[in-house]
Image (cartoon, rainbow, N blue to C red; front, side, top):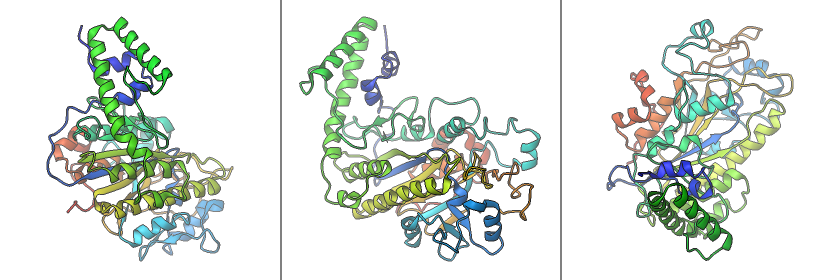
Length: 461
């Protein structure tokens, strides 16, 4: 009988040990002397309301914004005034003061109205004529479906892998081959999965310890490992035993390298997060500690995945979004400061994703409902300074019809100007993937051949 490690993990039912050891960091490109690079994905669960994250301040659109948003409008007449973005005609949500400072310092770029999109050229009229047609992503406005499409860049038919995992599969494991290039602090999420290599899932707080079959740290852990060994022998035979032992050896080696970093102290990183307690801050603190030790791990290119939520603000949006964006603001600012203090600000790019945006018109419970195109942040020393790619959708005169020319209904659901593929390809290009390698990750990118790379990032010098 022949069994590979992936089949073994499926047979073991995806338990804790399997989930922590399921990376297969072998089918990767050879190491090269290029500089260290890291991508950090922050997924904003629930659908962050981009319409109150980035706000039009020009004389034509700001009054229309106030009319359409009603009780949700952030107005210049009170403490909820948007934060102007330099000399642009846009403003940020008032909770994003530190993010606004990143714009001022040239370490933030913005991508406006990006979303799930199969090919360019879809019009509002064509969508309305056939909203479930072959040119429209499946199950628009559904949390699960749109979240998965954002993470996989597969818009019809579903996917078992994510574009982050597929991207990371091009890079070598670190730590003598035991630390996968895809590291998740939010579990084995779809974004992180690939067919030949899976993520190393790590805790944001607490230890990361894996014990071999002769472990002495805990009788419970040792018993569980022995039971796993016995089950593998019973169901699969010697091939399974060898695979388990191989996985266990890699996992023990990985935990031996990573646990001291996560549980240890960092004189550079720790003070920057000292007053922060949010889940996102804890995750980014752990990421920063690993990046601080990238030389010790002999890491060359890494992809990290973290998340924040819940932005599903069907009610009480002003309070909820303000709270979450304030957590985001604190955590991202501290994380950028950590990369700068480490001398790696240009080597680390942080970017956001979310299920979708939310309707421009509020609902009757102080919130908003599910929409489509959204606005995203790209943060880091390689972000093209004070750059906005795209435009905020323009608004029609206030009335009962569509909110603007890109509204596919009458509530303000924006038909995207840019695709997830273009966004992902821009990030893949920054970490050095060729066009052919990027097409293997994002086959739908071929539909956007006229503009596959967006001007959000400077190449790493």
